[in-house]
Image (cartoon, one colour):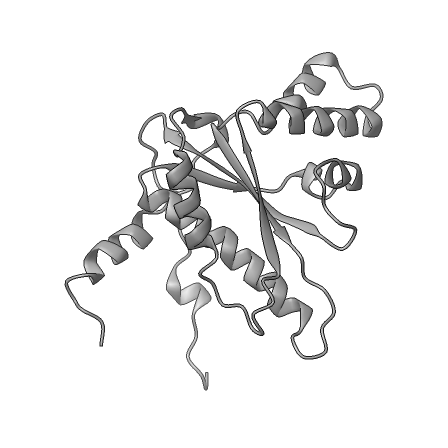
Length: 195
């Protein structure tokens, strides 16, 4: 049985996690040691068959703008009549927060492990990353957006043809308090079997 003295902190952490808008995440971001801690925690997820069906791409400093250039190029191709301010917004997509970590799903056919389980494992890695950021005192936001599905962007970011973005996790220091959003009533989402 778990040590009850450890439980309130974990329960409080899980109860207070809240997404923060990427534009509300300011410097400082996590240190190199904290980034390693975040990634280590992100790896502690169910992984049937020990396939490691995910990997991470870390964007910090100028790398955020270099990746943003690929996003802006893809946006300009997709929308040739786009206004310059819209293209510039896309260029800064990954530069709002001081740190962005892409969780890349490497799910694929396997003789024993369903692909769906591999995809879920990548999602769990992304959620662990969000929770770890909260535990270290940072705010985080899990974002996909059109550019997470654009093959030109994925190629420019170095993804293999079978890889997909599970999410871009934006991490930084929250600029202020935020109100929680309404959560679903348990009576609407939970049932007991048999009904």
